[in-house]
Structures are given as structure tokens and as C-alpha cells.
Length: 213
Picture 1 (cartoon, helix red, strand yellow):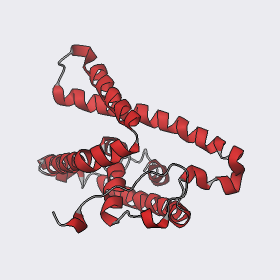
Picture 2 (spheres, helix red, strand yellow; picture 1 turned 90 degrees about the horizontal axis):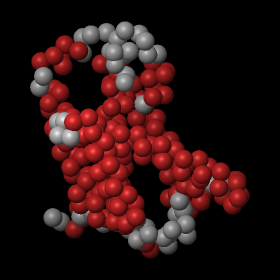
Picture 3 (cartoon, helix red, strand yellow; picture 1 turned 180 degrees about the vertical axis):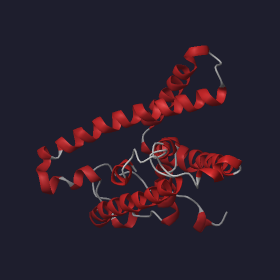
């Protein structure tokens, strides 16, 4: 593989500003990192909540608009990080002060715990559907525990292990392949195309759907 297409991860600098000479992330690095967050089981499950309240076409439109808005907000926040080379929570210190920044940091920790729990539930349910009831009613619990242990190991290993050793070398490519496979499975079903002509039942307002996305 040509060197310009190789994925390289930068060194970690904690809360200290990253020296300019070490800001080496390229487009491919950022693409892999952020696309891994935009493609996943939880995203697919969240999208399924838009129907039958919306038609399938309306759901696609809302998903596109919501993704553009969310990406714009992330990009706007990323400008600060790019200019000052500091993490998001640290960038709040000039506004809230060092002590004041602890509040959004604590809230961020809480929402990350909740988000992780939800992710583990979805992964456990998906794995149970794939494997079948190998352990009866405990199958979903079994897979959830397995994924929880794996995620804990990655967390203990730290960002370097997660990004450099797991995400960029293995996980992101599995995500891409599984997403392509799921998409092909859906599009090759005859009933899928009839759903494009089916109107929504109106139980989900467009603005609420946009907020969900």
C-alpha cells in the first residue's frame, strides 16, 4: 500500500496542547476515526425508529438533514480544537474556569456511561440474533457480558490501543463490510421497494424525527 494511503495515528498528549510539528493527522486518519462513529449498529437501530411514523423516503431525507446538521456542529467545535490543539473539555476552561469546566466534564462522563450501556445492549441483542438461542434465555446476557469485557479491556489499554491497534487495523473494516452486507441484504429483498411507496402513519412529527437523528 502506498505510504500516502497508510493510516497513521498521532502520539497522545493528554490535556496539553499538541505541538504543531506533531499535528500529523491526515484526511484518511480523520475519515476512519469519524466514520467509525457514524456507522454502527446503534445508528442503524436509531434509524429504524423513524418508521412507520415517517415514510421510508421521508426517513432518508430526515437522516440526511440531521447528519449534515450534526456534522456541521461537530466541525464548528472542531475548529477550536484545531486552532488551539486542546481537547474539548479543556477548551471550556477559558469560558467556565477550571472548576466550572468540571460540571460539563462530569455530565459528559454520565452520558458516556449511559451511551455505553445502550451500545452494549444493542450489541448483545444483535449477537444473540446472529448466534441463535445457544444458551436459551441467557444468550443475550452472555453476549452482552462478552462485549462489556472486551470494551473494558480496550478502555484499560487506552486510546493508543483502541485507535491504533484495534480501530484502524481491524474494527473499522469489519464495520464497513458488515454495513455493506446489511445494505445488500435489505435492497435485494422484493418487499423493500414496496416500502418506498408506503406513506408514514403520521405518528412521528418531522421535527421530532430530526431531533432523534
